[in-house]
Image (cartoon, rainbow, N blue to C red):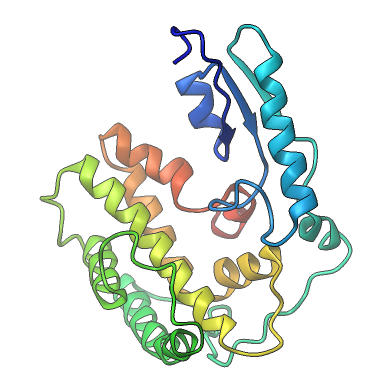
Length: 240
């Protein structure tokens, strides 16, 4: 398109990817994955993001990569206040030190089955879900990620495996957050929800095991998965 004289611009959620791809024009935004325009239902903020990205079309030649100068409004409010997520499932990740991978996976399986009750309730209320990008059912996602941590699906090609693991991790996160949303009075800001998932669930610990295993692989795709694509940078301090 650029060679045909049609200028292009884009919004980037992972700066490292954009620096490697090196597109003609890009705007990096410091938002959660899946929210390139920020929080839902905030039209004014979303328009500012879009206008900033479109203004890059005025740049005659690139590549140019600019940083969006604002956090989402919910992130600003969290600077002074962190809301407590009250989930009906008691995960107790901090109270029960894990002695083995098997114990972790057993705890994850129990947690997942408890969460399914609330996810089913969420489905009955909204009749929609954002899970399923991996093509797996929730139960199949559980089985797939568990098998990887146990070393049972090592014969899958690394490129396909990296993509599948990334999407399964996203499905599991969505499964938990949708189940949480079935309870009235829960905070909806992204920081509180992210802090709950990454800080209070066995699912997050299992995803971290996937991250650690991926970093040991020779494949560039698997190493990229472990470095950037599983756990947000602002949550990595929990696992170091």
